[in-house]
Length: 115
Length: 442
Image (cartoon, rainbow over all chains, first blue to last red; front, top):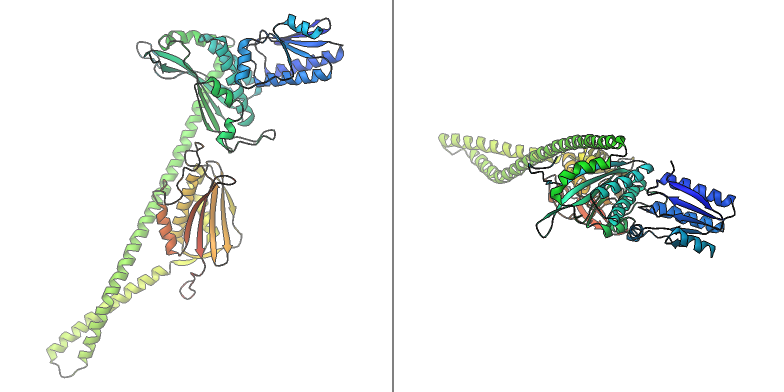
């Protein structure tokens, strides 16, 4: 079973990642998202990380890459629901996510994409 | 189980060992660390920090050091109020030496390595981070100790069973894998120990041989010096007594009894002259031990039998011409001197490094140059530890003795260090060519 789910909220793609995701699943997730964005005319992608407990440099780097490729496809990406512990750990390990939009929850992320 | 009768854990307590062989293992490590931290009652931020630390370090080992293993232990901490608390210790060990990956070269210094991720993060979140090796192609080990977790060391034995159940509840296979990893580890340690014992044995044999060689040399030298000393002292009196006696014997006017006594003195004086001649002969024979020696061949022979080179995993890089490079030397003595210099150098350079050995022909001299990256026996990353003159390494043979042997060959020993482009230990033995005396030497 995949540790992520991909939903369609009309013109926005909502990707929800579970508490733990392996390196192989990260690759699979990225492929699926890119494929859907290419197939459909989407306003943007929301990656919901509210269940995620740990984000390491591998996942951060791949989210960064996904965001860049989505920018080229004119579908901006917003990360929502990052837990304070995850944020603090990212800062501890100097793992940065430049050029990515953030929102506190999915609702805010939707507002951000539709504005 | 490290508990006393009261059930209190006294020593660091091993919780689990996990192998890092494939990329999938990283997620497994992250999950186990999260489970363990949660079972120990850590806060969410601590859980995330430990999980990211282990994930990042495991990834470093996998990409740069050919994988490895991670060991998690609980260790006791005595708090200022004399209470015992526990902390988590993560020990990571790489399987192989550092290798170049994706154009990223192996770090040349500890500072360079510490500047790379995830060390900055590890130093931020752990109370203690101990790094060993990891530079210049060496293997790596990282020990990280957390601050006290507030778990109460005395209560841990009762909780260990629950913690273990929690850790391995997801799959029975994980527990078996853990056991398998431990079993492999024990086997590896046994193999390492066996190899070390063999090396120790070989080194002991070599030391014994060197020691007996030195004793033999010292004995020979003492006899030789004594012979010459006696010969020098006896030569003049024997010649004078013999000469005067022979002059007196030519006189015809002496009484017969007196002549008999003179003949006896003459006979004894001749005996003494023979002894002096014998001493001179033995001194000459000893001088004849100095013969033409192919320096390159001698070095190759020493390298073949040197256990130190193997023990330190050094890679000799020979720059020796195929043509013989002759010097005049006492082969046995020179072999001892070169062996000791090589051993000295082997202990002074980084383990596993390349050792350059060159025989150079110069006008009027022949050079034996040995060099390698400066490190020292412990390889803790501290450079410049080795003394560069007259220091005694494990052979028991001082470099001064090597200098003495070389002085007898009119050769010189020079030990220097160079800091640019990299710290290097250089040993040069210079043999002059004006030493040859063709009439006496073969």
